[in-house]
Image 1 (cartoon, rainbow, N blue to C red):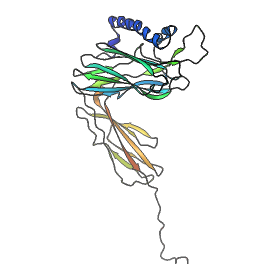
Image 2 (image 1 turned 45 degrees about the vertical axis):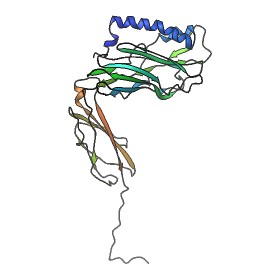
Image 3 (image 1 turned 30 degrees about the vertical axis):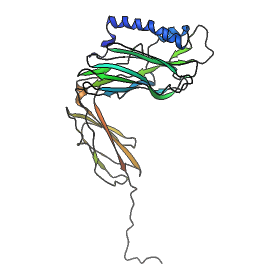
Image 4 (image 1 turned 135 degrees about the horizontal axis):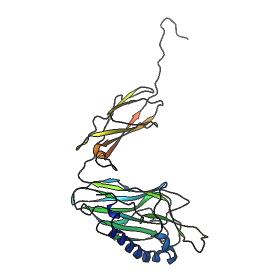
Length: 308
């Protein structure tokens, strides 16, 4: 499926215009008529705040259902989230959106939230807004959980990059009469992906020394990692001491400079990215490595009598 197919046809834009008109009634229930103009005004801009799907690569068999969490990260305290909306599209020959339930991010608002859900053949429009003029929420969290049913075999983008996807803050008073109390929060949406025809690799590794000392070279061996339907093309190591490397061979060496416990993380990436420019399947595993403090045992000179 073309990454932007669900936004590229004339009938889709006509449908979007129809939805925009219907959404105005929903916003009237939440705030007031002067706020409508801003709801449809701005697209999301690239910024530190991120809107993403977890897991970003979903897998399920034909006839099964799976869920993905719509999550937000790094909402600034100076622009707390008051309201949000997402337009998601997908390949309808493979996926069918079943339901969307509210996440925990806005659930603790004093008067709760109001939400809406519209489902089309290959799209869904959903969102929630805080009731009343209460401050928004900052930080990280889950906005919603999306339930999707697999109706065919293949691959599909879960595309949330759209002019109808946005995050809004409630501006504190005073707000000039000619301006809206709602304002766009600049953020970056990240699409997800579904496949049931490509399997993910499995990451595994061992290391050579059971009780390594400071400065002692350790061999890390990831040759036990495997990909059931392809090959592993990249091994990404995070040694837990600030050093990270990405290599194409399974075996690497590393030494530590301080006595403590380090968590070593291995991520293996398979060759699916050779056929899909915008995604690769991967697997991650971790192991703890304990580094001892090397101790020097003094030599005993038998010709020198011990000191009383």
